[in-house]
Length: 427
Image 1 (cartoon, rainbow, N blue to C red):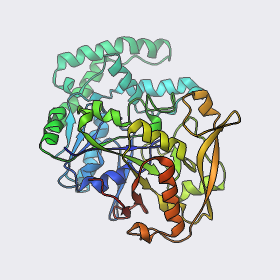
Image 2 (image 1 turned 90 degrees about the vertical axis):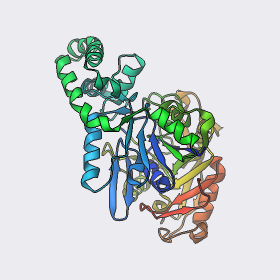
Image 3 (image 1 turned 180 degrees about the vertical axis):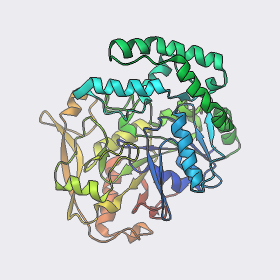
Image 4 (image 1 turned 120 degrees about the vertical axis):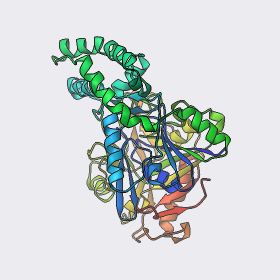
């Protein structure tokens, strides 16, 4: 019953797409279990680069069945556009399965997201403006639209009416916006039904039967641990659970079926959007990491904030996810630095703290405590084994492994599919 969870161990953008794609040829199903098109994965296959937003990375692996689980929120127009783009490039998307229980991002969810962020001004969260948060809010408030609702016009109309009863009051009286017509929303959503129908399935049943048949299932998280709604740097977080527990609720499988949990770590640290970031750099080193690492959001197009590796949040990710392995990405980006600082603890109110503080106030005031490791200048992109790496690069990896609390089983030494060193097999 080999079920694996693969997730981000920082603030997202760690290179999960590359890791999922690496495993894609060895697994039978790849499942997105949370988030929406606010996530972005870049996968390089040969000389082709693919930017995926909503689709599981496994869609690029022949023989692998990609699944969008019940915990995902789906913008039908974005999904169909992404499918069309891949089809035009010769990618077979016919095996995709979408949970009928996944919630739909409606036009009014997008509108509410954008106007709310503008209204917040300096207090804004830094959302992508794609309606993700309002859709999850509707889900919790029990006024959400699910994929299966697109196939019952009466139910769909009733649910849209219920949702817009309150939202139109807010839009017109608080934000001075025009009310949204129920009929217009219903018509647009019904227009997606026939196009989506070939993909809609009872994915909970499919995945549990697959595990019973000893198929290999990989659960792929979007965003990262520090963006988790419960365990992240709240309120500067996403609206779902990218942590390992989210795979169980977001895909409908029990925790006893998970055999391995793999955390993706970038060899330095980045984040997009607002919120605390202790190791953030505002100097030439930060700009160099951004430039060399190509640190621009796949979905947002925003420059990522860059900083040195933070072992405190890596240890935290190990703990809250029960990580069994790490996949360290973008080690090649650090080539050329004579010395590389690593954050091993924080200083808060004059005291050394080695674990992530639970207090939001303390975390906002945390100052990084660095240890400096020797760098390397040799090109590592052609390395095929750990022993091929320069001694200082090996020492850097071993130091991060010891500080983070779980073995590093694979290392990314370049953006390409083959530019990976596998130390221990994930399967």
